[in-house]
Amino acid sequence: MKEESKHLNAIEEDTIDIIAILKEFWVARKTILKITLVFTLLGLFVAIFTKNEFTASTTFVPVNQGESVKGSLGGLASLAGINLGSGTSGAEISPELYPQIVSSIPFQLALLNTPLTIEGQQEPVTYKDYYENVYSPGFLAHLKKYTLGLPGVLLSLLKPVVKETEKKNNPQENELIHISFTDNELIEQLANQINLEVNSKEGFVSISVTLPEARASAQLALKAQQLLQDYALQFKTQKSIEQLDYIKDRYAEKQKEFNTIKIALARFQDQNSGINTALGRTKLLQLQADYDLVFSVYSELAKQLETQQLQVKKDTPLFTVLKPVTVPIEKSAPKRGIILMVYLFLGLVLGSGYVFGKRYVTDFKTAWRLK
Image 1 (cartoon, rainbow, N blue to C red):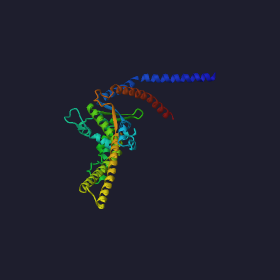
Image 2 (image 1 turned 90 degrees about the vertical axis):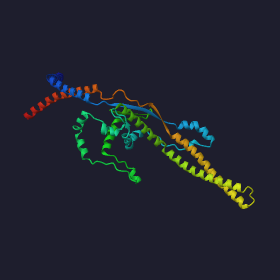
Image 3 (image 1 turned 60 degrees about the horizontal axis):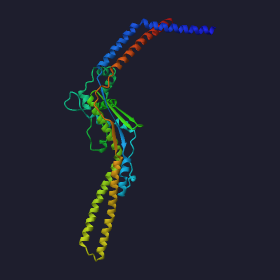
Image 4 (image 1 turned 180 degrees about the vertical axis):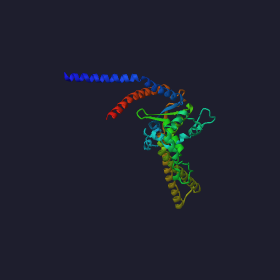
């Protein structure tokens, strides 16, 4: 009986506490409504003055055409004495490599210099010129920059300015990439505006770009797609192209040597149609042996040249575009309804927290005085 009575008393105390809290919220409802109203107006202000943004995207699939080349040309190559299986394929492109390419400095610098069509501008301007000379971030961006971002602004003034250096004759110096502080800020901003999604399971790659201009976002997305495909193409075919260039050089050398020995042999045969001396027959045998040797090497290089050309074709990836880049019609941001709901909810939470916290602060002060 005692335990039951204790349990009932505990339930009664909890019920009283909940009712007391609810009553306290009801008494302070005007305060909560005022705080909620302030945050709602703030959300309305943010929703109205936030600049529109547009998102353009594209999706493509890298296709390795090695198997199709080998299957369709294997029979023809075998008739010419060429073995397609002897070639060495370039390294496969890992799906994790695409984000590394997009985040690389050369890739980002190429995007900074991409010409964009901007509304109100007679001629295309680059991404860099647009954000340095044309783009107006608006009141909210300035407010955020000089309030929440004020420490960053002060730190940027203290950093030394990295001046762009001229290229030197030393090839090792030319391999170094020098970027200014302004370019570094634009690269960081560009990294937030480009989104890359690699689906290794399905085998497709998606790129999306978000900019304040609809047409400019589509142009930058198309440029990013082309650059990414060029980088992947260069990576995949670099080894086989270098081997092809080497074989081409050797083939040109042996072709010149073969033409020289062929003319020398023909001239000697024309001048000595009836050879009766041992010295003449020895000279003819020597020229014939040189001709046969050079011809065999020349023929082998011709086969290797044809094989390597097929190998380059095999290693060259194709890109099937599933979703081409289109100029967005509707804005992707801001979601004004969501902004209002978030600020409304934030106002309710903070208003309730203020009332709830005020109660505990009062209790704490009372307990402090009693102690």
